[in-house]
Image (cartoon, rainbow, N blue to C red; front, side, top):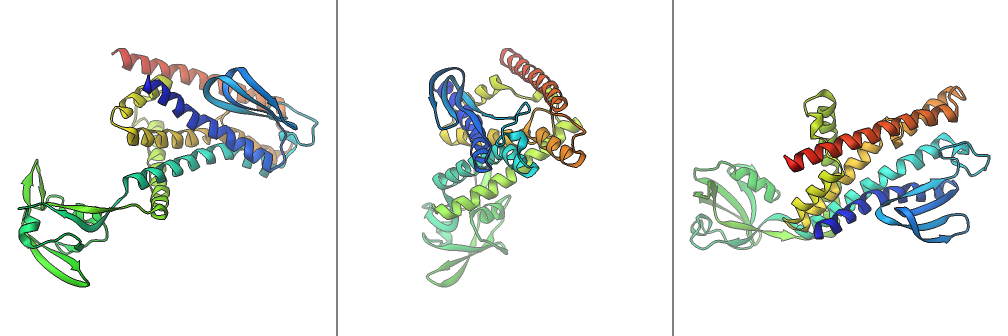
Length: 331
């Protein structure tokens, strides 16, 4: 039951903010929005605003933003099709931008909750190599084996495969002291018996969250390249059923892995939507640019036909991905 609830929340966090991004930007540039819906399917609640119908629909798996003149020509001066190319691009890109923003916010929250391990020693294990060398609580590690240490990650990397005695320099009450420490083997790795002070700083967490999101985005583009070049098999593509399976796997390990999954899929959605493919936001942006250059060489009807064909291909891909999920499920 928890998996189902978190699965629904996952879809809400991914799709609804995406549509909210389109809605807010449409309002900002003066596009008329006919309906903004929370959820899909039959309406269970409606409220007519000054010009927009707000609705809550039966299936809580996203939402939509229906703009005047989005899919067909309209004579309304505030219609999407009447707006400048720049305004159209802003509206189309706003959904993906909101997904990226969600990813940064959630990643920053993760960084704040988990904290950042500093290069200040919190605990020295009794009878450990560090204790024997004279290392104390509160010492700030500044050098390990000749490598400058700025944070705990630096120290962790310096200890990788370190078997022999090495020099450890710490800062204690404004003075630097150097000790010789001999690591000992413990569960297949070499340790000296110290733990770090974990710092929780909101501003640093936001910076780390943004940086981590940027790094993850780069890795996703690399993965997309591998998919296009055939380094990753198409059969590895995951659909909705597979996503629910991932939710089950992550929640069994705690909420932090679930929120990491949310960040991962939110960025995937942003990247996927900006691909230059018909029916996707990226494809629509390409058409805006083409029509800006060619004028009326392409009609609304022709563009809508291309996007319609693109939607059929996307639905086919969704069926294929779902089939892959079911095959993996019953394998």
